[in-house]
Length: 602
Image (cartoon, rainbow, N blue to C red; front, side, top):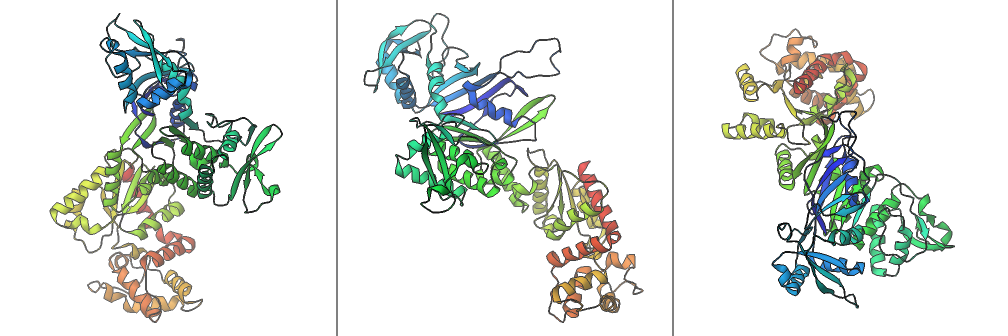
């Protein structure tokens, strides 16, 4: 059984969702809080759906609400599945057929029950399923009025076949009722809440109730199947390594699930499930469903709210092995999205007073990942941000956010700093350069889930003004350059450099003044064409000196070759030291970073 698509009408935030495709495998639902993600997941309960009408400014306050919430959906099952459904209910069933098919009843039924794909058009409302029009079977066109035919069928006495008992010329159609009575065994919606399902009446049961309330009973029944039981326990241990064993015991007329966190035969160390940690009951229920149904639908709302990130990831990996099912998962976690590798992604947004869904198919997701790979980023790097500032390298990626947090007067929300893969690509041959700009253009072209605005920050280095103007023009004003030659030009402070060396080599290895003296003595050679007064604070010298080379040599010589300058480590340390001891020294850099965000936001 599969639900290829559905449409939500007049339910909570949804006035009309439009048709939403649900492919086989994983479908991920994302969106901001209160956008409608949970409401969308609730609609998958279908026959259990409550009516909760949509409220909108479009409707005048004196106009009565339409009381009926509706979910239209298509159901795809196989012919053998349909036959088993009919046999299981033990009632007379009217099966629609065309005017041509009514003349060949055995051939029609045999062909129907042999089909690999039987599509049905159904509608859920008021706690039951209906066909929005005759016939529910979407294998032939709706007939003209007066041309409605149905075969009258029932189960054979041995329940092994469907017996034909005649036909009727009317619009009777029992298939929605058949599906209503049977398909609940294959659809489960798990809320983001603790389930109190550790104890229930000791009744024989193999099908988990939609709310999981009979979990203890089905797990007791599972104990009669040792191989499946061991597979179930193995999966539980994969998600929760500290759970060593699970068993169901009788307590009066009830059965109770107990959990052991140690390997022992002592019964007194078994903890009742209802006293176990948050999420354990959810996982037992989800895993039981996954291993006992085939071709079902499992819906999970925000697993990260009741699971550790590692446990949530492991759950997804286990569910992927049961690939005959459909999975719909709502999450804020980019890591879970990457783990699930979904076939579709649904972005739920609140727009103009209603919830709306934007559909992103697997091919689009694949393109998105390829684009990010081209710039050396992952989906989790930029997921959920409004703006991305691409910076020169990993040091800027680490330090810029720290400086923003400590020195910028306004909190910069929705912005992420990420290192570009290779700044040289932007100045390479014309064709390659155009390709790189095209890639970044596409990353800022309104693809759902990606930042909608992009700006670049590069080192000035020895670029001429002409080169800077060319890059600025090619980027349409999105490239900005550090006011100084490189990031290291903001770090030439003897006290900070001495503190860094002393951390590496031991306390009091070198004095601040010794570092200052070395810089004054050797600083000229890192900017030979400049008449320098040997003042380290000279702004013209600080702006143009080749600070990366200066720091590299200073670390090597002053440490007596025992410490090599590493930008990704030592630049970060010096930045943090300055923020703590001399924050005003980084004020000009903080102003520059703020200007980048202002550009990205505009």
